[in-house]
Length: 114
Length: 186
Image (cartoon, each protein chain N blue to C red):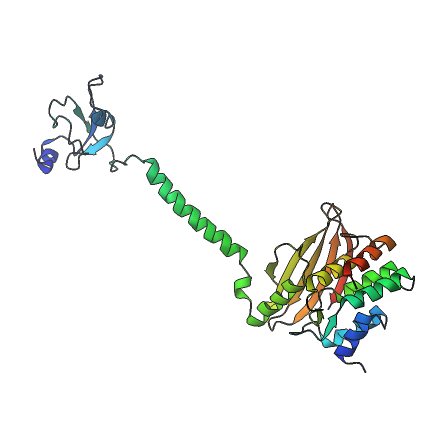
């Protein structure tokens, strides 16, 4: 049985399907006064590479970002909070911000500078 | 003649001020033309005929009497308007804050977390009342590429400050729902 921290880490690292991670995380509730896992630029460039390599679809990428967006228990890498917050917002809202295309995702990965 | 004495010796306690109607009438007396005064409560000019060379007369008045209304000067209008503006401003602020001032401490902390996680493009968060002491936090994030489209983030928080549900609904430019994502609850 996964702990909340372990599930969040799996979600962030995309090592289990997003839908399963979300489902299992429900029992812990939404709220957290402090981050229990930290999203880094490396985590995002990793999922972007999965997309660019064809191992993840655009819809899956959007769902992954949606699962992370707004969570109280996921913090952002120190010093890059606004960059990561913006990247997650873009990926979770491609219709309103930036379409998930190969070119755009390459640009985003380059912007993250890892 | 003393004022009370004037009131006693006249036919009625009240009169209508009449001027002689020519261009020699003093402006201050012309302003009294047609107005009703009481003999024992005359205007600043005194009763008709009292001022030196005054040719004005008093026409007996038998109707009801209302004390004369003083002229309203602009400065007397602006002062109450300025006060009214302040009152309205305070009222608007109170309406904007409606809901937030009644948040429990735990709800207020949840609101802070909600705000912290929103995109920098997010508009003002509104707080509305839900059932059983619940509060609903709502914020819209406009689209960058489609004018009129936006994502609405809505979080329902119970009295204890726990998140009951959190949804994101994406709207098209005509207000149509494009997608709805339940992040938590429901």
